Amino acid sequence: MAKNISFTIKYWKQNGPKDKGHFDTHEMKNVPDDTSFLEMLDMLNEELINEGQEPFVFDHDCREGICGMCSLYINGTPHGKTERGATTCQLYMRKFNDGDVITVEPWRSAGFPVIKDCMVDRSAFDKIIQAGGYTSVRTGQPQDANAILIPKQDADEAMDCATCIGCGACVAACKNGSAMLFVSSKVSQLALLPQGRPEAAKRAKAMVARMDELGFGNCTNTRACEAVCPKCESISNIARLNREFIKAKLND
Amino acid sequence: MWLIDSSIGRKVVMSVSGIALILFLTFHASMNVVALFSAEGYNMICEFLGANWYAVVATIGLGALVVVHFVMAFILNYQNRKARGNNAYAVTNKPEQVEWASQNMLVLGIIIILGMLLHLFNFWYNMMFAELAGLAGPFDNPSPSDGYAFIVKTFSNPVYSVIYVLWLIALWFHLTHGFWSAMQTLGVSGKIWFNRWKVIGFVFSTIIILMFLAVVVKFSLFAA
Image (tube, rainbow over all chains, first blue to last red; front, side):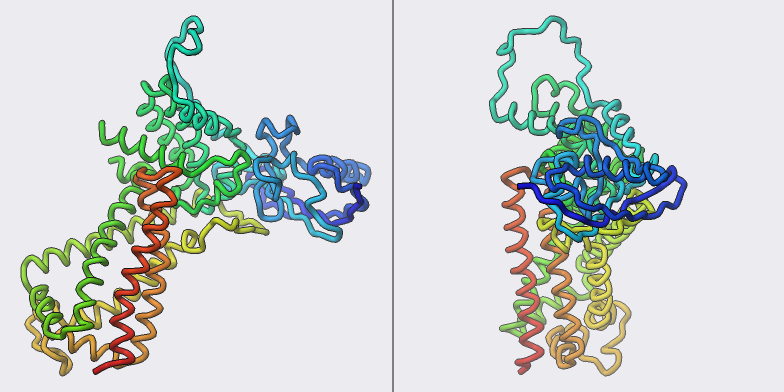
């Protein structure tokens, strides 16, 4: 049975990237614990609007754990303490207790400037993809599905890498603001498949160069990224990217 | 030059210099263990590694490695701080699998460098440097190639013993992360080898540190 909880929410307010920003607090009363975290924020905004205040801005879209648009740093963890493999929209209030103080912050990284409050600009990830996260071969008509044989293990692993939704939790969790888990997953999903091999070296070099240029940090293998990744990407992807990159550079 | 211009290149420099330094530590620990059972044997090694040209060249190479590892660490740290941005999180929650050492490599490195400076003053300055500079046993010290006497002298002072033990503990933490991290950066890791490198690194660093510790403990507590 659902029960109701009351708690204090401490949320980040910031007017654009140049503003210093500050926390506001609000008391939430009798919130049913089967409410999702984002629904709870909707309730907060209803109350703020009724009080004549400006609503709290945050990113969200599909709200069914697919798109990777939601991005809140909740009580010190990107996406909060959801069950493994879920984003903020799949976090429910039953994970919290009566009387808690819930702190909500944006992804904090130089690569992701704040647009407003907890909404950050993650277009840097799109720019990295544009640098080479695709295959540019002319595919023509679809071939027979089994014309190119791919070992099941490789196909599965490529699929696991492709589940990265580019939410940016890895960068948010990293003390170095490094985007290596994202970039390595996006390089791996193609590097593992024969269709991706012809451009593998070019891709690894271009995407890493763009990542560095956009001001993301250097990976120091702390593993904070894989601990918080809502899609459970593994740092073995990072080892693969390192391998691809070093091989490409040595072949130059 | 991709080793300096790219993030992965800079990490490769850290990995390769780090692995070279681990190999040096392995050699140094093996040499030290000789002092546990033979003063003469140990001094033979000291003489061999005195002011001979190959020992001097190797020392310069080693110094260069330390400088590269150290300078690159500061460059990486500076860039990483910049990438992190100026706003710190109000609440942070360290995930369980994140090792403490992995987030404090720079601090551990600075402790190691400070310990190393003391160590160079205790031994290298009185030995290879004294020989090169032609100072015969400065400050009423034993002869420059009598390494055994320097060990006895240093660890007769309990302050030095405690500092050396703390230094070795910092080095242990640094190595347990550094070892597998280097393999990860060089790309010779994966889902299976990640766990293997972690275990190998843990066992290897523990053995090396125990070898160093054995000498400190013996000459501090059971000096002849």
